[in-house]
Length: 269
Ligand SMILES: [Mn+2]
Image 1 (spheres, rainbow, N blue to C red):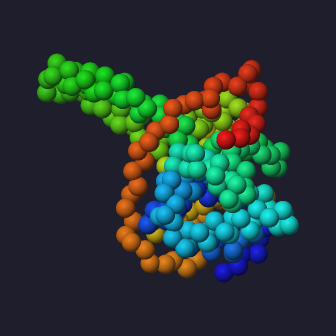
Image 2 (cartoon, rainbow, N blue to C red; image 1 turned 135 degrees about the vertical axis):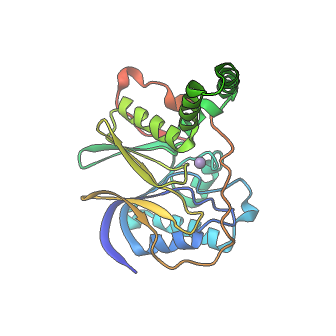
Image 3 (cartoon, rainbow, N blue to C red; image 1 turned 45 degrees about the vertical axis):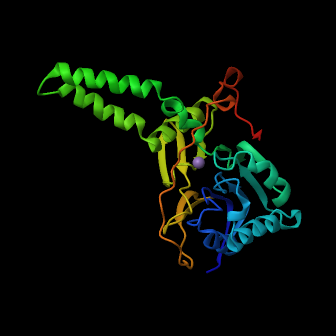
């Protein structure tokens, strides 16, 4: 199923090569069947540092990336570092021949686009669990004081769970981040849930993942940004286990306010 349209950009993330649930074969097929001028590998392309876990299908995907990055192909291929491929990215940029960024910024149709993996927005509560623990303690005390109706503690509990949901943390963080950087469109992965949220003139897109039966990716062309579901051949795999998104990154430099809210530029890894 060759798709003859020319996309400006194709974005995919969270392939988790090295994990047995990685849909590497499907991802390789997608890249062969769709036309694009720019490919953004939006992080967690690898699952961990253990190269021995890469199967031949995983290597085929990497070899496809290497071919695409050949200047003759006139396709811009960039790798945006995720929390799982941190540290690995440098090695892979040499092996596969693509530049690695912490944050990648480009212009299209007069709009500023930024791609960051998204783990940077995931650490607000969880990087140290001091505040959640304090919150829990307070809630417990409040429940004891409140007696039977517990209206207040139930309200707080509801707010707390929504605050702590990783998907919304990443979305909220990304939307604020994009606004501060005067970016119209921000793209993340990390949550493994493909989504689109528009707020205050900023569009947030998540590219989902390639580790279950419904791989997703994003395309950008004149008609806008689309969340797409892989519709090619699907191969048999071990039943997908939800991957723990265990390691949480410190906020680091990426969230430092840029001087005078100047526009964001790409940051190499
Ligand atoms: Mn991630």
